[in-house]
Image (cartoon, rainbow over all chains, first blue to last red; front, side):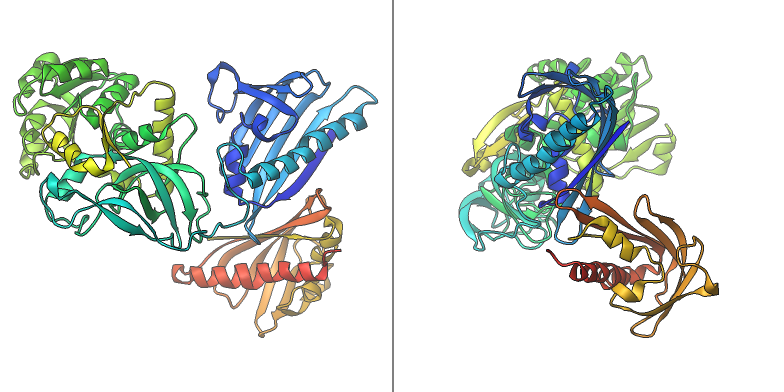
Length: 491
Length: 145
């Protein structure tokens, strides 16, 4: 048995090195020996068991299988399935550790294998020198010159802001609460990122009903003068001190407080940013982060929807509604949706809604009872509030769960314990930002969302696009219930 | 809580290990240690032996050797007695060769319980004052050639 161990120190933070290495399908991007790589059966490249097919520069083809991957240990293990080079029982492990002294990365690459008799030294040299040593040098160069998905990334430990100055750019500024007309474009100064912050060049901005609430009347979250908006996507220009999970050049997206996304450039805290996978474009991310992560936690965390559950979705053709319908259907639930027009009913049906109900906001409960033969809905997703709440409760099954995740028509009246006892009902009023507060939860939710979009199970319909300076028009359409799917602003 | 500090020393791992493996040898390389002895006249590489040493500011620390591996270049020990106010303290120091450049990757990890209000202070004291100071001293003792 031949055992090889090679190791090196890469002059980049461990997050940057791991981001490239953990992708089992990335070696062709940086390793000089690998000409092409693909994962068989379109499995995700971070799913142990997946097989990558390599073509080397000399034309040889080999197949390797990922057998372990750990984001906790920054390590992965793989074995060779087929190779023209006689490396038998070859198992290799890559493991990274942080060098806290200087923000660098220690990289260890080990393997064991058997060879035909007499060829041990030759093949040990091939693997250790041509594959491992060459790989260390190549990845260092790749990160240094900013290759692939990581432009200009990771040359040093922490990238201090390179433009120390504020930059002037366009943003919507609300000077007083009020109607859509208070959304006015102005030139503002966007500060260089401080510790824990990044400066973004935004490429797409999500518009949400929350923005309407915050614009319309006094609240603790948007205090004029302020720029509204909680969702966006773009490219990182600079990062402040202490930011290591995001690097300049990264494509990122977010759905978080504080408000301020209706802007061409913005400086904001880094901890709520998610790095976008290549398959997710900026517009999709800006349209899907808030609504998609809302759908994610509503269906998996607030209530764990199971195959066979009966789910009632209000505003089923709206931004969150369309995503709830598709995702609940994907899980295997029976989906009933309420909509305001026959056109919207068609949209909801296309999204997987089994029973679209066209009815005024208060009058859907009898139809839900009919459709379910008196059972009612196991879970009701209600973002409408005051106008629908009583009907939602009426439509609820015994031991059902009424999830009030928004209140577009106002806060419903309080509900008494005696009323809850009529059905052993649960009523919750969840808020996205409480589910995304921990960065690991946020990344977990975003990963699930991106996976659903990448697989095609979730279609994000961007049906309205407005230039940033016409944000007021976007709000008018939203408030008049004339929009479907997602609405975005383009700086 | 857990503390992790790592560094790279510009010397082959065997040479760095030669210095670090001596459980009674802290005064020879660590700047904050004034003296050291092994209790009960035992060999310093007998697993289970206890070292008793004073820091330069006069504090007495007693630590038991829990594991010593010349194969992994690693050494684990627990604090029996110290003025630091920590409990269930266990630490591991471990070296790994960096084949690229024949250097040594060194890591020092500690896990222990303490009053939550003192976490930041102890992180600084142990992470910087003890572990990083030790690695910095090794870097000085094995200068780049």
